[in-house]
Amino acid sequence: MKSRYVDWLAGGLAAGVMLAWIALDPTSARPAGANVDEPPAARTGGAGQQTCNTCHNGALNDGQATFAFSGVPASYTPGQTYPITVSLARSGASRWGFEATVLKTSDNSAAGTIVVTSNLTTLQTQAGKFYISHTNLNGPDGTFPGTANGPVAWSFNWTAPSAGAGAVGFYAAGVAADNDGNDGGGDLVYTTSTSSSEAPPTAVTATTWGKIKAHYLH
Image (cartoon, rainbow, N blue to C red):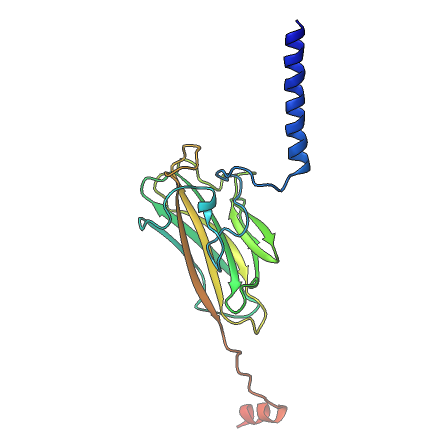
């Protein structure tokens, strides 16, 4: 009986020590795992960022997927809002994820703002930058579980920065997963990017009331 009590007491003390260590040291590295709810910020593969490979262990850009932005203007008008879509397809995959951002080419700071337009996506900010990604926390599941081969797509709005920002880059990382609940070699990771230049200001010709009268009375 005494031995059982000693064992129980020792086990309780060990558990207490472990909980205290976690509470006092919350920032220490923990084992990585797949992120169904939303990925960590800054995993788009752009401007020196990491990709989804930090958690998913499959091949990176194996060449078998179609992963791309659509709706990105060749040149943007400062302050204008554009609907943007990111789509991903790969034969054999049946669960999906992504994260995207938009950065100034000049200094890799945030370029404009990103606005969520669907409950398939969620928005995070880190160091002043916006990151939009899949979610399955509320409503429809943004990882499209069981959707074989794709394509799947996520949409959002991007409001261009004010004049003088210059060229911007759109960056995204995506996961074409096998939906087995693990983050192993069956979860393949892809990256894509595109760019948009700033449109030149529209020339405005000065006019006067005299010019207007002359035009219509001529």
